[in-house]
Length: 263
Image 1 (tube, rainbow, N blue to C red):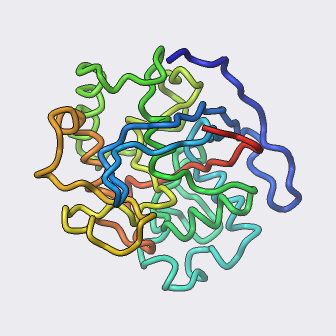
Image 2 (spheres, one colour):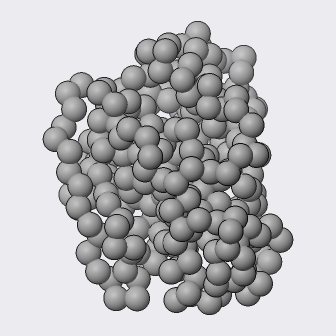
Image 3 (cartoon, rainbow, N blue to C red):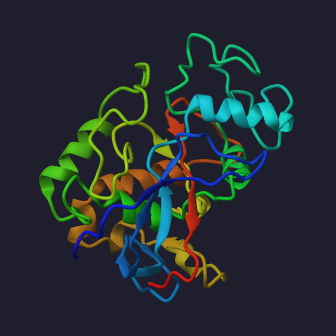
């Protein structure tokens, strides 16, 4: 697969829904048969992913502060408990103040799926689907799909093995991938739109919804699936979450559709 030319541009203004002025987007080519370790109920191990746009970096504390400033219902202390648990933005200095533990350029964490979705909607976007995120995350600095490279997978596993107690770096410090995207690996875990589809049980394939993605179960994994252990770790992480959960190492970025995009 050939890498397409890099396309980066600022998000157009949307009134009060305008994104941070530094927000940049990259266009990700689609894949008509993206191979995954998740299955549809028909047993097919591929999914069609249409071309889409993805933020080149995670949403930062400064971005999210601007969001809660204009959307008071998402401020710490004001958000409805059903939408965010008690740890929501607990590292901030206050509902409208970042403080010493939350630098402006750090990725925002301690945000729930509900809050992340609301932020993306406020800028005319959405959370990426799991397949979209994994398609983008399959790239390295020179290749759109590096998943067959054991050294690349080991590099990702090296990050997963590190303690998460250290202060997070600012976004965009590492080398961008072939699409111009930063920090899909090595900074924070990220919410996806369909995180609840990460059901880690072979029995889940018997559920009634034919459109719901299902994890294929450890006993059914191929040798290739087991070799890409970082993917399985991400599935395990997401499958353990509820939509109101927040953690110190979980952030997000937004995606948006491309008009007329086809796989």
